[in-house]
Length: 85
Image (tube, rainbow, N blue to C red):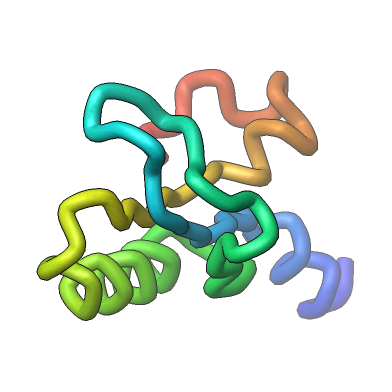
């Protein structure tokens, strides 16, 4: 197995995105076209860093929320059923 294959197997892709919510009581976005897709990250730690920066930058807007989506779980749900991230 080459180094690139080993690296690919260890990738646990995470998506960071956010937007303004319609209400503080749910997760319905006010305007889907204005969602802020921060990016896709190769591991939880780097995704969390990006999420934290965006969340802190928008702290004055109570309706603004950012999320981390575990893409690796959606792409291969059986691969890491016991994974902590």
